[in-house]
Length: 569
View 1 (cartoon, rainbow, N blue to C red):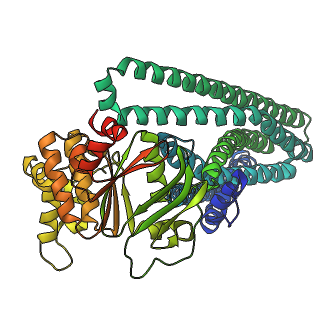
View 2: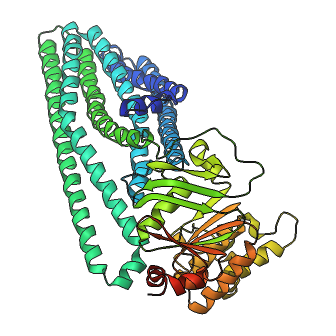
View 3: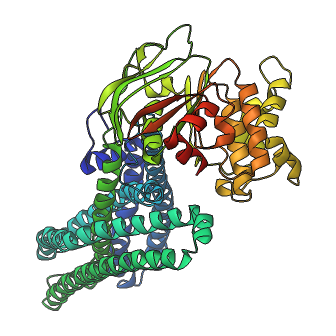
């Protein structure tokens, strides 16, 4: 779709262009089918005039054989053409889904801004499918056009007035269908927006179901979804009404058009201008034309919905990145020192902070917003509004975000587990370390106390964890997530509240284990947990978006009131 920002029209053009060869094959086969359909009433008229009217049995058998051959040809051409068209639609939808997933997973971020996860899923499924279906609509539209033209030409041979009625009336009918499709396009886009938002809210509520139950907020959550779903239903009904009106009016106009053709043909037959066989052919052709003209109505509706979906797809693909990509290389050798100077982002107000190489540093906060802003900076999910963040003297803004994350891993406390087994969620390192021994795996599982989780599961590491790890308790999920982060062995590891859902005894053991496993590597614990802060080499307190105190956990507990309030209250 090019390097610029794609529009809805660009998305549609790309979806059709990528399937050009397959779509061309489908159109050619469909054109053969339509020509066969036109030939059938013409041949029936010939049979009436040359065989039935003359009572010639030999000619009757001959022409019936020709009809049979035509039927077989048009049947196979339809099957093969429809198959190629469906394949083009599915392939186009697949290409769009891949492009959308690639954009959503882009290390620079930005696609998810202002959108719930469920909404992105809806765009990558339903909207991508509707855009892909434009291939089928175009193919069907071309088939219908070929059928109308061929029918009109055949009618010209039967009767010039009948052929002219079709040739002049069809463009007017198509234009009317286009105008009637405009309200459907607008309402379809609104309906898709509402439906995607409802899906997003539903996914959001399901993912936070345990929290809602803990807060006793199920009723409020249900009411919120009910309002969203009601809005979605209203938009869907408006779109359905628009579609029914559009389809009904187009079919009414089509019926009037066909009736006009039949009336004109009957008058010509009565006046002797055409024969009985020609009248049969004319009526047959008029009835045949009903199908392609109905297809035009369907195509208009499909294109209207496809344009609305294409605009939504384009909005995601054209989303501005949250951060820009740099081309600098990682420091070599990488020591793992992080330095923040006069960083301003959100609640951070000119933060100066040094995270020394190889040190286990604790970061406590009086405001959770400070922790979130710090994590966003270190992970390069958002660049500071001003100031700088450096890794061994190299500005993070000069690095590609994906490259940076191979060295600096920020493990959020609310990270997700994926559908699959526990072993699959831990990663390939859980089989054995690079040297072929199991010491690394054992050390990580012990440090995170994930070994206890494994022993408690019916099939050990082969146990499925369910979507989002919902078959595990909150504490079990946290230990698995911690094991996954520790097992990756990043040069710099930033852990955010990794033990909020475990008991005090387990938390103390995890604190000791993290210190042992990460010995000699830069590790940052962003937490207010006394058990974790007690094992760090040094603690800094963020208060008001700045560093207000530094020292060991024991010293700060004794000397700093703000620290005691944040950590011990």
